[in-house]
Structure formats: C-alpha cells, structure tokens
Length: 353
Image 1 (tube, rainbow, N blue to C red):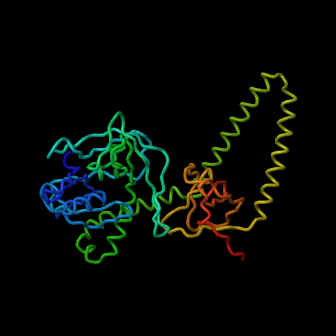
Image 2: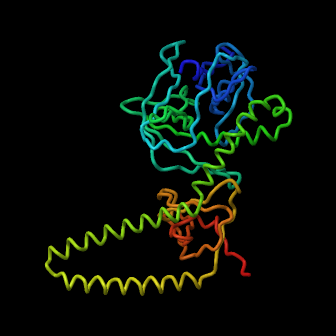
Image 3: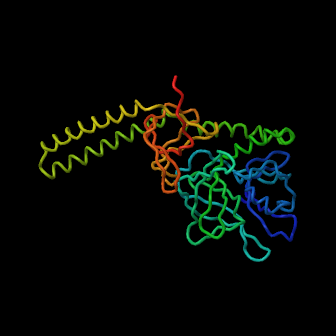
C-alpha cells in the first residue's frame, strides 16, 4: 500500500505539522486524496512529496477534505460501504519517529460496536462516528489524522481516522460521509467543471450510499428482524419454563400457572394497546431529509440504538415523557414493532384529519 497512503506536510519548513491521507480516485490528470480538514488547517500550505496540492472541497463539521495532487503515480484504495462484520481493524498512518523524521506505522485496533452522534451547535445537522481502540500500548498522535481504517476481513477502507492525541482511543468517520462532500462540490459550478470527471466517477458511489441507507431504514426488514427475535425469545422462555417445572415436579400446577400468566399478560397487553391506540398520533420533526432519528433503549444518548425513524415517519404513539439525569426531556414512543426512547425535540403531535 506504499502508493495508496500519503504524507501531507507544509511547504513552510518551519511548520512541522503533518498528517495522513489516502487515495480514493485517480485519472490521467492526477490523484484525489481524502484527509481530515483539521490537517489542512494546521499544515496550511499543504504539499505531498514536495508537490503543492489543491483543496477540492472541505467540511469543518465533518472534519473531512478532498485534495487534488497533479500526479498519476498513486493507486486508489477500495472503499467499502457495507458493515465490516469484524471488530478487528487496521489503520496505516504517519507519526513522528525522531527529529526531522516520520514513520509510516501499521496500527492494529478494535472497532467499537456502538455509534456516537456528533451534533452541530448551529442547526439540527448530525452524523455518526465510532470509536476505535489501539491494541497493546500504542497511543494515537496528531500525524495519524486522515489515515484509512481498513476492515481486516475484506482489506477495504470503511472509515477515516480522526484522532485524539495522547490516548489509545481514536474516532472513525464513516466512508459514506464522502457523499456530503460530493454534494458540496456539486454546488460550486467552477470547481464542478474542473473536477467533473472525478465527480461523475463517484456518482455510482453516491447511489450506493443512498441504497445502503434505504436498506437499513426499510421498515419491512426491521419488522422481520423483530418478529424473528420475538420467536426466539418465546422459544427460549418456553424451554426454560419446562426445565424448571420438571425439576420441581409440579408439571400440572406449572401448566395452570403458565395459562394464568398468559391470561394476565394478554389482558395487560390488550389494555396497554387500547391506551396506546386511543392516544394522539405523533410524527418526526426538526430532522434533515437525509438523516434518521435514533430510537434508543433508554432516555439518553448513552443507551443503545434499537431502531431508526425516517424523517417522514408518522403514526407514532407517545407513551410518556420524562427528564433524564442531565435535565434533557426524552419521550418513550411506540412505532410499528418498536418501543423505545427519542429526544423530545424530534417529535411533534400530528394534525388530526
């Protein structure tokens, strides 16, 4: 991968800042490289192998940037939108070796399962990242920023590293966020004309991002998943009950108890459903059209995400609302097969028809 991953430094030799980047596309004119926006901010007059680079598009909120190098000697890396299905990952990044020397290191790490939401302080925009943890005693450093995060199972790039200096933890920005950079490029007529070939090549990538998101959002897929889970839980529960009943040798009494409990459960469930069904409907609000609303297991961002709602989701039932320990209002809702918690600012009572 020596020609895939590049060292980004300043043309000003007094500026010792540097970072990492990796090739996402190349054509007869040159090479397109993805890196962190903050790398360009600290390096300022960025160069690669003593050649000046052009900033094609950058986004400080995403901390992502695409730069252009007028060289055809580099080969692009394969990007992967599908989940890695393996928590073992690798990143290859530049870091300090000693005075006036840098090294390219292979860092083995573990990918965290849960997502973290990063919200804008100016509007309702947000995106998702994940944490990674370096194996053994490695500590991430500033020069690692912009390095590719590679799925060990497929050897493809699934994210970009945006580090936290001095610890063994760093952050992974999903490769799908490139779509937002492409949308910015499309809005700049002069840049679009200059880099049209690059944009057209990545139009397929944009479609794949949209398709991937729609697959995850598809309520039918989620409903099947929940039904299968319910069947498994029901089967496990019945198996556990049978074992206990046989051990206690009260088989008939146990059967009667199960029927009694089932009757109570059915009654309570029916009454609960009646209450839910008589409540007014709610709908999703204050959410950009390209984002989804996370439904969490509990009232707070620290709880696991159990579902995602589209911006067009309606017919949502409100169960109750409360303020969590941080003083933030969260609401418990029921939608299709899911019951969970959402931030109160993202739902509103739907108008009656």
